[in-house]
Length: 113
Image: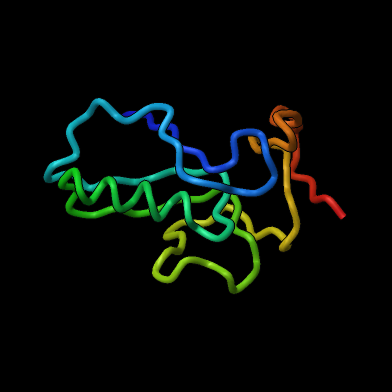
């Protein structure tokens, strides 16, 4: 079990370039990796992380997402293997996801109009 932190949002509501805040210390060569994420929207962040894991020698990389947005704009080949809940194609926050760095601790998932 290890931790990584990569983001494209940095407090904004739209993504930019992938920024690594923390890379795992555990060597990935020969390992099966499960990436657990709060939300799969278009998949740019998870695509970058998955490719990095493969470059590090992971033999398999799967994705578990608490929430997956319902739309057809995903990066080709990026989808969640395990899904908690499907959410509308709106900006969602709460239950670990933020809106302008706030609302992560809300006890449910909310969607902006």
